[in-house]
Image (tube, rainbow, N blue to C red):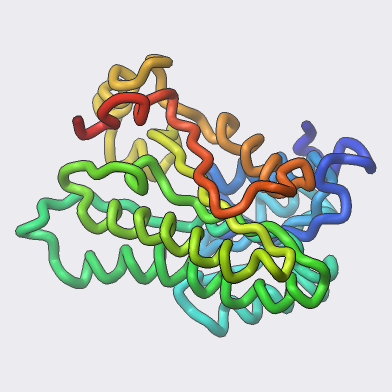
Length: 261
């Protein structure tokens, strides 16, 4: 893989793919963008983090463009897809990766905070699928990857809202896979465990990350580079018979009682 201006080989596993990666400017999203470009894809880095997004697009060179994108806004989705089409051609690949996290007790969490998490995590995923599906269907199909979580497989105290969104993404993925399969569009969910990103460390702190590492069989938290190859596989034709499925990368935490057990 290379990070200095484009794919490392013309015949990469994602050659000919045009991808939108939401939340693509930093953390897990940035790793996905780098891996996609290294495998021959052209990528729209979609995020509200303008400075980080522009820096990443510059790093990736002609194979990437940055778009300021609010996933909760339908017009922003339409503009993002239009930009991708103008820059690279019809979208073949969507990674609904953007999301936010907030810890709060069920009985004290403000309603506006609950609704904000759903607006970004769930509404953003829905609008992404809604907007790209007609484009993919008109051009022979595609692959959609929705980032859920291990909290989309099991619950955790103080994460009622976040867990609710990740279960919703898991369910929407299966329903969309049924609906879009006949159109050649595959839809899968990805379920990361605790991943060492700025967002996660900002909430958990060093002590929380150490606690997370202690809870999994591999005895470490993940890093974005642990997740990106899974997205490459799902974006590629290698996963052509996989849809409506759950792909887990969690260090083994869901092999027993997850983080909240």
